[in-house]
Image (cartoon, rainbow, N blue to C red):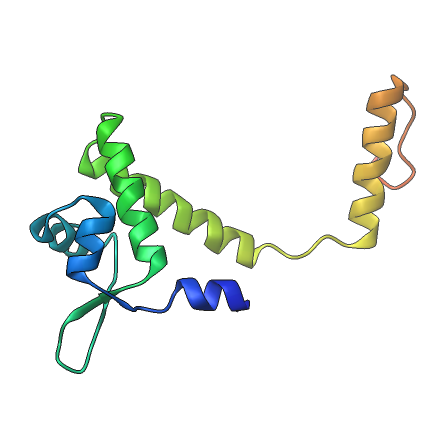
Length: 126
């Protein structure tokens, strides 16, 4: 994890500070936690502690609600994001051959040419 992401994920804000920063009530914040949209850490005294990432999510939720999205829609947005991240992690990296094929196709498209790509595999001939 990069330094910036590490710092943003540190849970250092108590709920009172988060309330001031987000203009949300404690009940709203706890509700979003119950809906598993945020995941605050707990201090030794069992107090909720929030990170900058948690605050970003809360502000984003407020924006979605003001845009007319309901809680089910917001949860679906976050579910789709998680699926995209998971798919991106599972997807193998591009090989040199892939990059050459993409570059070649792009050059043909830009040049308006219609040649057969030597980097593209050809299927069985019938």
